[in-house]
Amino acid sequence: MKRVLLGGTFAGLVVFLVSAVDHLALPIGRMGVKTLPQEDLVLGAMSSAIKEPGLYMFPGMDFSKTPTDEQQKEYGARYLAGPTGLLVYSTGGVPPMQPRQLSTELLSDILAAWIAAWAVSLTAPSFGRRVLLVALLGLFAWLSITVSYWTWYRFPGAYVLGEGIDQAVSWLAGGFVLAAVFRGR
Image (cartoon, rainbow, N blue to C red; front, side, top):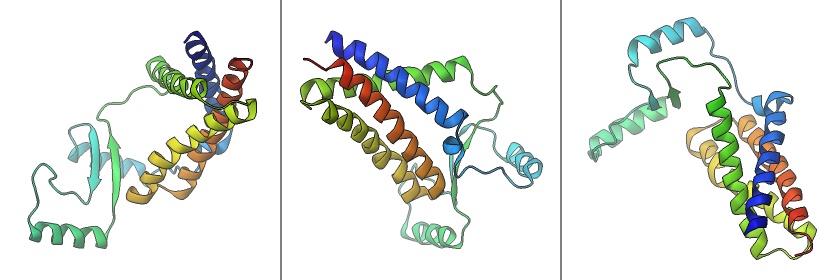
């Protein structure tokens, strides 16, 4: 258990640092992300119309109740006509890269690395297989989450690809840490 916690902590830190490099020093973290055209106009309209933070889907439908066949048909027609999308909206601004955001990201990477360390402790007899196992866990997460966003919500392909590269590279690096920690067990 000591190796799981210690190895997972170090691997999580490495994943966090590699991902930070991907997002801050390399273009990987910005792939597929664009600036709003006519941003002042769009933000003004959003500020006037949207009063609560949340995740908004458009065209919208009230998902709090079961829609009638007619409502489903009307929604389908609006969805087909477009535009469609998701909007993650916050009513107030916050400084970018706050300590709370960074610490939450680091903690989530460490928790994920503890899971990977536990998996490595149960399996993967060779150094290379331990590295591969952890890298595959990163790809698993990407395929099960980010690719779904591309499939269902039309996240840009370049964004999805960038996230895949980030997950593969950062968890490969974390895999090297865990493989070294579990060497000789």
